[in-house]
Image (cartoon, rainbow, N blue to C red; front, side, top):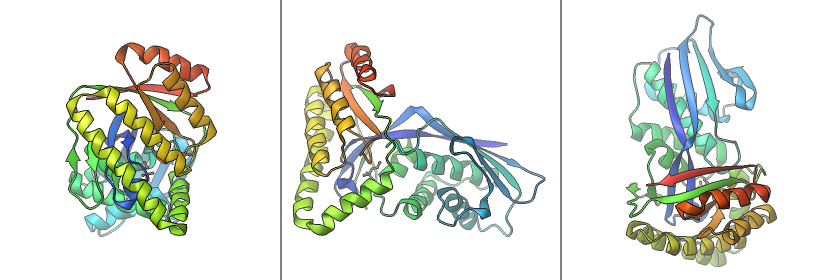
Length: 308
Ligand code: MEV
C-alpha cells in the first residue's frame, strides 16, 4: 500500500485578482488534510472509494472532466504506462468541499503523489504541481494556480501567475481563525461570476484588481516585518474589495463583523467566497474569545491555525 497526504489552504490576500495575474499570499492548513491510499487489487480496473463524496466507481466510468479521473489520467499519461493497472484507491478528506479551503486541489495532489509512487515512479513536486494545475483547469476552468501551488509545496507562498514561486518569510507567527459560514460555494461559480463582471467592464475591474495586488504587496512587507495589526487593517481593506467584487454574502459579512467586534485585528473572506470560510487574524490571547463569538454568531466550525 502507498499513502500520501496533502494539506488544505487559505488565501491570506489577493483571491480572485490572482486569476488576473495580480500577486496573492496563501498558506497551508495542516489541521485539515486529504489522504489517499493506493493498493494493488485482484479486481480488473482502477476502483475509487471516496466516502466523503459518496463515490464508489471504476475510474473510467467517470466523465473525462471529473477531477478524480482527470488526475488519474494525468498520472497514467505522465508515466507512459503500457496498460492500465489493477488498483484500489481510497480517498479520505477532512477538508470540507466548496468551502474555499482547497479540498479539490488537496485531493488531486495527494492522489497524484500516492499513485505515481505506488507505480514506482514518484513524481517531483514540480511535476505534481503541474498535473494538479492541469486537473484544476479541467475541473474549474480558469484557476490561477495558487491552490495547487501552496498545497503541493505545503508552505506559505507569495504567488503571481507565470512567475517562479516565492516562499513567504514571516517575521512573527500569525494566529488565524478559519470560520466556516456553513454555506457551500463552489469556487468555479464565483470565479465565473467575477469573470462576467470583468467582461462587462474590464477597465473598472482591472482597477479593482490593481488595488488588491497593491494590498497583497503591502501585506507581504507587513508579514515579513512582523506587523500583525497592520496586516489586520490590510485584511479589512481586502475584504471591502471582495465585497465590491460580489464574492462575499450577508452571512460571511456578519461573521466578519463579529470577528472584528470581538477583538480580531482583521477579517476577510478567504478563497472563492459567496459562502465558504472567512479568516480572522487575532492576538494569541484572544483566539478563544473570538472563536466563541464566531460560533455563537452561527459559524459551523472554527479552526485555529498558525502561519509561521
Ligand atoms: C481560490 O482558492 C482562489 C481564487 O482566486 C481562484 C483561483 O485563484 O484560481 C478564487
